[in-house]
Amino acid sequence: MYYGFHNSISGKRGYAAALDAAAAMGTTAAQLFAKSPRSWKTRNLKPGEAEAFRDALAIGPVRKTAIHASYLVNLGASGELWEKSVFSLADDLYKAALLGVDYVVVHPGSGDPERVRAGALKALALAPAGAKLLLENVAGGGRKVGRSFEELAVVIEGTALGVCFDTCHAFAAGYPLHQDAAGVISELDEVIGLERVPLFHLNDSRGAFASAVDHHANLGQGAIGAALAEFVRDPRLADKTFIMETPKEYDAMNLRTLRSWLADA
Ligand SMILES: [Zn+2]
Ligand SMILES: [Zn+2]
Image (cartoon, rainbow, N blue to C red; front, side, top):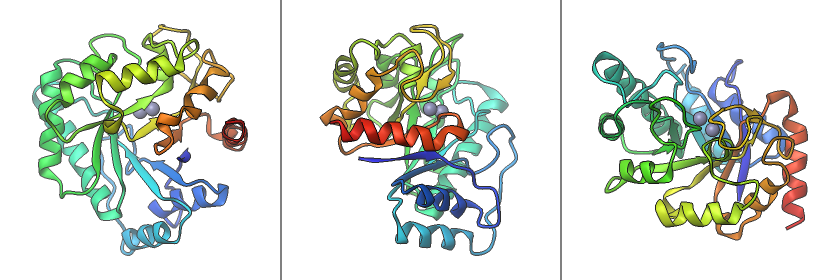
């Protein structure tokens, strides 16, 4: 199992700063934004930046990396918003290929699931081969695509697309992780296939069960609570990558919690 946090890329080292932060905590995975997640503006690579990132990856201890796409991306939209979304995602896939990042994670968006599929495939076609593109399950609300496993399965069917499973989102969407973590994993396996889910976002939930509220909590301190330990300890997930998107100021505490859960296994 690989695990780590979503880390910042600010500072002199740029993208490599996310790996520096992971290494400083002794974690083996890291997620980052390749550009501001709330702007359409891209961020150009500085000279030597990709090399510095690849060098840091080679040194370790980080082995698995992910880029989280912009929150503005809506692959279910139509017209200009869809076009901008596709280009923004293709830009992240391009960066991932240059940096040697394993996964690019995107929220599908809202609207038409067929547009989501077409947009994801177009972004992949525009970018050089490299990272695997993963659609993240969402908490729900409105016409958001990706609340249910069935919906994600239909979107990725027959493609190279995968899924990133966020525990907070699944719980808020009505998957009973607080009562039956093993059962939810079985359902994920039956409907999507665990081989198509290499990456997990490990977050507790401030929102109640089936509330559709996407509000992350520290491990064990939200509405999922101690049951989250059973989830992360499930042997079927032993080779997966876990990223915590918990409140940043509590990284050290969440890391201690996760390690105590894994030591108990
Ligand atoms: Zn996300
Ligand atoms: Zn997430």
